[in-house]
Image (cartoon, rainbow, N blue to C red):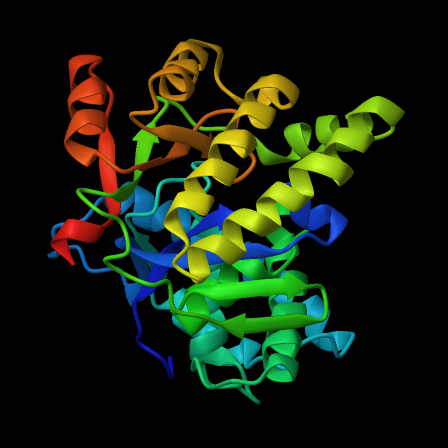
Length: 320
């Protein structure tokens, strides 16, 4: 194994669903959850059942990559990969599955890092052309897990910097301005209590988009608001950002209702009504985590604690 790096979870701050229509998207690595390729050891404190299951899955993944290699769709050292799998290689990960945080993307990035023959080294200094090439490679490799992949999740895990997807032909690394929120601003995750399933929800969204009225809302309102949220956040225009975010959240509540777990819809509406926090989808929704934004983190934290809901801080302006 050539690489031995830790790969982080990812959060799509904005761009879920809209990216299908070539909207902008903004993703960040999230170091709270991470994974790495290591060898099984009966003397280590780990879940050996999970290690064995991961090892079994890597065997299947190696076979998939070998087929791609035969088609010249990726250049990987499959022989070395399979030998290491025989020695007990597995992916030790704290990234929860089906929670919208890119668990398979981190694994794909780790395997590429360790076994790619003509590796493009991950760096924020990569130009757009190099990032697009990596994105294409990762999309093919991650398709093993989802049937279809944009390649964004493994790209974000591999680059380890915030990425701005301007359109399908341009990707750049960016910095999100810090300390622009007066008071106690924060971005956070809230746990809906169970995993979500991406494929059926994406299918539902695409079917709804065949309806003229629904499609018009997505194209004329949802996508422009997504782009405005991203632009205002990157530019540090916080008041405009929260205004656009409130509108985006309201559209998701009204037009993407099936993607929001039923038992969380009152919490979502409470944020819109009080202004204490604003919720939006994190990934495809249906379960997993939701994203929250607030100018008053202590208020938001108290609300979710009082409702016995797990909250995980992603970014807190007053503490940076």
